[in-house]
Structures are given as structure tokens and as C-alpha cells.
Length: 245
Image: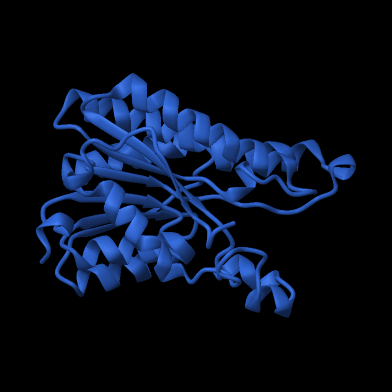
């Protein structure tokens, strides 16, 4: 095991951890020694990922929750600490970005997008950061989007929520330093489940320097780097993983 990326004995919690980028991050940490908490809406999906991690010899807690609801976020934190006694790395990854013309946006959809992409991550990060700061410290990684930097039409609530995540990262990084480091990964277009709705040409080509969308496994190095103890002087940072968008 490379000592820079050895997470043996660490506990890593990933929301939206049963598929897409979250799944890749869960597996990457488990493969490098971490015990994991896999959180998403469907328990059976969390169980399947947890079983993969247990097969690697890790402890794994599957937990069904809605990452946009504060009560669910609080229940997740309580369950994690009851099971493991600590969280060393929190990855706020759950999100959604349904397109809708702004003039047709129903209030319920607006609220759902902001709840999942900002309100819930704020609650989870704040509660975990407080506990980390009272204990042995830790690391929080928020997953934003290049939509926060290059807003596109018809996804105004999503772009706004992810821009809020960027600001939250900097603010909380200063609030809970020095014991807690808080950073943001800013992904560009990735071939996750959401890409199944893309036109075929978008799955092949993207208007970025690399000329193509990213593959889910290409997100893990950013997460491992930010979580590594070797990154102990990195906080309040945004790491773009967007193919040069």
C-alpha cells in the first residue's frame, strides 16, 4: 500500500454512494483499507455495494436516506457514529440536475433540487464537521459541478445550488479549521447513469480540451488526493476534474 494513500482504519462516508461517481469513490477507499458507509435512497443498492466492500475485508454500513432532508442527514450521522464511533472522511456526492425551462419550473422541483444539492449537504457537512472538530479532526469533500462555473440554460436551480456549495466549502473550511479540512471537487461531464439520457454524440464528444466526457474511474484520484494526510495543507480548495472545460 502506498503510504500516501493508505486509509487503513479510516471511516469514509459517501452519499449517493451506490452508483456513478459515488460508487467509484466508495470502492477506491475500500480497496485502500477504509471502512465505508454507503448512503443513498434505495437500501438494496447500498447493500449490494456494501457486500462488495465486505468481500475486500472491510466493514461496511449500508444506509437508506434522502440526502436533501435534514432529519435523514441527522439519522445517518447518528448511525455512523453508533457503528464506527467516528467519521474520518465525508463525501457529499448525492445530487440531481433535471433540466426544465425556467419559466415552467414548478416550486416543488425548485425546492427538491436545492434541498438535495445544497440544503442537505450543508446539514451533513456542518454536523460532521462539528463532531470532527471536537474529536480527532477529519476531511470533508463536497462534490460540485462545472455548472457552478459555466451555468447552462434550463438548470438554474442546479447551477445556483452548486455555486452555493463552492461558497459553503470556503466558508466552512475557515470555520472548522485547523482540525477539519473541507474541499470541493468540481466534475465536468461524466459518463455516469445520467449520461444515458444524453444524445449519442454527447456520449462520444464534449466541448472540452480532452474532447470527450470523463469515465467514472477518473474521479477517484481527486478524492484520494484530497482525503490523504499528505494534503494536510489543502483546505477551501476547488479541484476541477472536467477535461479542461
